[in-house]
Length: 299
Image 1: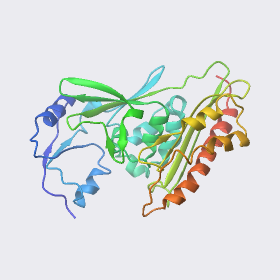
Image 2: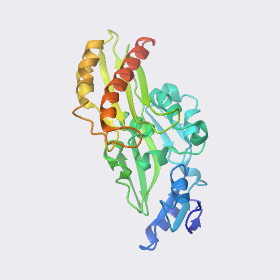
Image 3: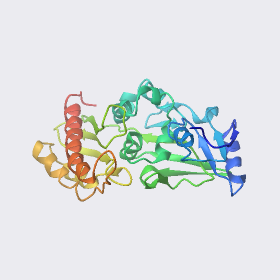
Image 4: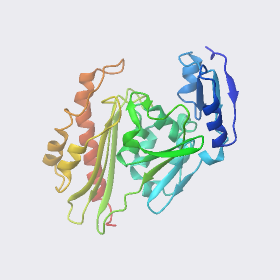
C-alpha cells in the first residue's frame, strides 16, 4: 500500500521544527520523522495518516555521541548502529552495549534512532528498558523553552509518553556508573523472541556492582514486555544489595517479580506465558551480571 497524502517539511534547526509544531493548524496531524522504522510502515498501511511530516534527519544538533567523565550524551536522532559502534561505549555504558545487538537486525539499526525508540514507548523495546535502568533522562525542546524529563517519568502507558505535541526530543543523557574503589561492575541481558531480530515477547536486564568482598553494593534490574511500560524491579534490587549474590539470594529476589508485572496476551504469547518466562529471564540476566562482574579486575 501507499501512504495517504501529506505535506513534507525538512527543517535545518531544532527551533524551526518547534516553530512548525507550535504554529501548526490544530486540525492537522503533525509527525516527526527520524529513523522511520515504525512510522513509515504504519503510514504505508494507512494505520497512521499524518497530514504534515517533519523530517529531522539533516539537523546536525540532533546527531552525535559525547562520552563525558560522568555521563554519555546522545543526540536523539543518532542511529542505533552509530551508538553500537561508538569507541568506548562498552566501557562507559556496558549494559547499552550488551542490549543494542538485540534491537532488530543491523539493517534496522542502521536507520532506527535512539530517541525514536524511546519516544515510541514500546514496553518490549530494548533501548527504553536500558535507559530506564541506568537512570537516563531526555531533554525536550519547544518554542522558547526546554525541560529535562527522567526516563522513569517519561512513559505513561503503551506507546504513550509525557512528550507534548509541540515538543521534540533533542538528546538522551545516561549516567556512567563509576565504581567504588576495588569494586567490579557486570551486566546481563536476555530476551525471548520468536526469531532473532523479532519483537521481544519479554526481556530482562541487570547491571550489578560488587565490592572487593563480592557483596552487591548497587543493582539495577528490570524487565520489558511484562507491563504497559518497561519496569524497574526495585524490590528485587533491594533484596540483593548488601548480600553476596548466590543462587538462593537470586531466587529470593526474583520471587518478588510476579506481584510487579502485569503482562497482556498478544498474538505472540499469552499473559500466562510471559509470567512464566519473565522470572527465568531475570534470573539469567542477574546471574550473567554477577558472573561478568566477578570476572573483571577491580576498578
